[in-house]
Image (cartoon, rainbow, N blue to C red; front, side, top):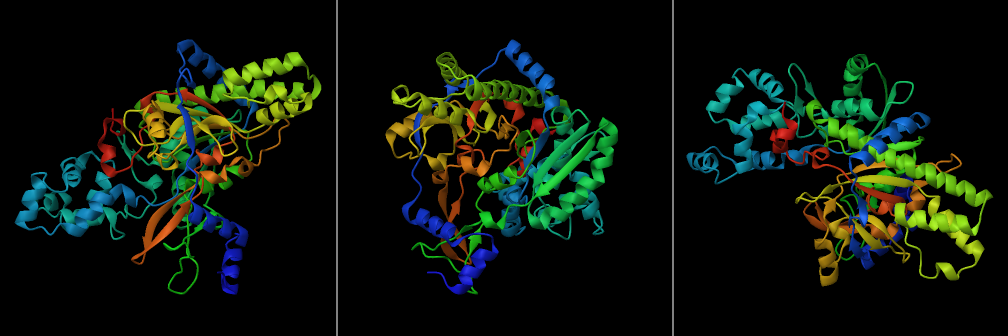
Length: 516
């Protein structure tokens, strides 16, 4: 199946032939669907906090955070091209004829693009677009009146203009203020000041970026850093990483044979955000907040974000402190009374369901079991009431080792043709907005090897194409899904205002992305 040159290509990428063979077996056999046991809902998997508990969690965070190093981890790879999918389609298909214009102006065709132009002045990038277009000798306003929609969009999207169709999403102007605009990168920097600042006034951020965008990402941060350091009296430490080529997965044809490029080399594809567990694992810190690049709001709406980041951080630190205490006592003060106390706490606070044969095991086996279950990475995850938004849902799920635990589950992981599974799925009340606080060191201060807590059987296969040929691609277990399968998981309801992603350009016209 593999030639000498294949072996050399695989080794050069940092992969092993065994990994590639495992991936091909996953294409042949598929991934087993995750078996849902119950939806995680209020009172059974999701904490819904009253005002007193919210204040207590915030106090815990502010009281304990000084003893911990904190990093804000922001997945920011990839270009923003998907944001402009409808605009690209318009450029490709609109010919400017009277018939085309009549359909467009009446909303019969390209309604999203019609809405874009009707509100074009409300985008934070409008002034930049205007200046770029005006250099052509004709003003943007004149071109708009003359129905030169394609020319305007090309100025926005292509390299001869603003190049927004090829830039990373983090570098686009999202929000307009009275006399300046901000990119998502800048909004994350401002956020970090309010919940990721250490006792020395340092704010540490880590962006995962595509290799081709690394240079311009760094240039943008360097350009704005001093402004925010002066405004907030902090020092920013910003690091970057790229998705490792060793985490790319092989592509196969429809017969599950390795897909080959025109030069007969093997085709490898990025394996989704699950590959970023390797990037997360390399960060040497105590606490990591995880939040996607496009989930930001202007300053006048940030207060709830600050508040509930401290809430999930405070509960994380409370849980961690108790877990560390129990682990130390297991080592030094083991007793039946301690065992019973840990079992009760694990059920009520850690969502740990003991196996049915636990009580019949020997004392040493029970002790080792509890120690292993407590000595794991911990995550607290915000959950938003489901109002139709896409995103992984919280469920009680049976894992590949037979245990039951709280998991964030994507639709692709579920067998919806099974009526029982579909019924459980339909009862879900919340979804995950990628709002995580992670404790990644053990009770002795040693960093966990996060790759050891991944469930490799929670990836999935998809159909793609290249050069007009169909192929199968494979995604690794998602970063906040199967890649964190064996973590201690605590799910906490957070308000919807903390989730405002920008998936397509017109999302920037929503009130949550407009000035006060």
